[in-house]
Image (cartoon, rainbow, N blue to C red; front, side, top):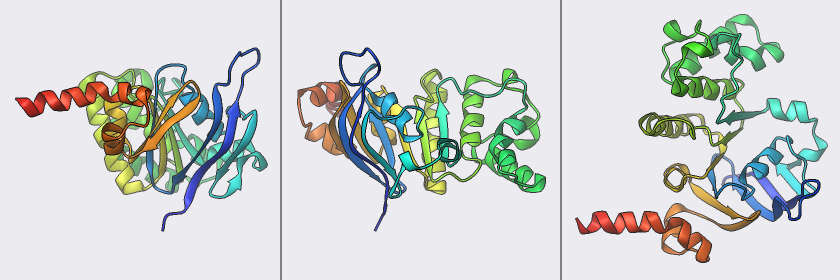
Length: 255
C-alpha cells in the first residue's frame, strides 16, 4: 500500500493587497510514486500551489505535510535540497558547463568527485544526452530541448523523492515537447519519484498524469484519473476544459 507523499490540509495563500486568495482552502493528498499533473488557466493558482511545497511561498493558513512531516517545521534550505525543481526558464548557470550545472547540489552535500562524475554520466544517459559530447558544453551551446534535459538531470542529481515541474516544456516546439514528455514518462517509470507537474495544456495533463488536479480561481475543481475527468466532469468548468479533447476523440472515431 502506497504511503502519502504530499498532503495539503485546508491550505490558503493570500498575497499582500490581493482582493482574493491565490489558493483558497485547498485539501488533497498525493501517494508516493504518483505523477500528478496540475491543470488550469493562467492565474488559477497552480504555480502558487506548487511553490508552497518547497517553501518558495509560505501558506497564509493551513498545513502542508511531506511524508507525514509538517514542512513548516523543516529548514527551508534543507527541504529544497531534498526536492527536485524544474521550471520553464530552465535556470541553468550560463558560466558553468553541463557537468558543473548537474553537480551543484552534490558538491554542496559533500559528495566525493568520483561519485559526482559517475552520477553525471548516469544522468546524461538517462535524459538521452551523450556524456562524451555534452558534459563540457555550456548552456548557450545547447538547444532549448537539450537545456531542459540538463535541467531535469540536475533536478534528479541527489535522488529526490519529490520532483516539482512548473510548465517545463511550455517554451519547447511541438516535436521536442512530445519527445520530452515521453522521456519524462520513461524516467518516472524508472526513478519512481513523486511528481507534481504544472501545465495549462490539457493534452499534456492527460498524457502525463496518473491523476489530474484541475484548478480554477484558487480552488480544486476536480482531482481524479484522466478517464474520469473526461467521462464524468464534476462541473461545467471541468466539462468545458476537456470539451476540445472529447470533440477530437469523436471526430477521429467518425473517420
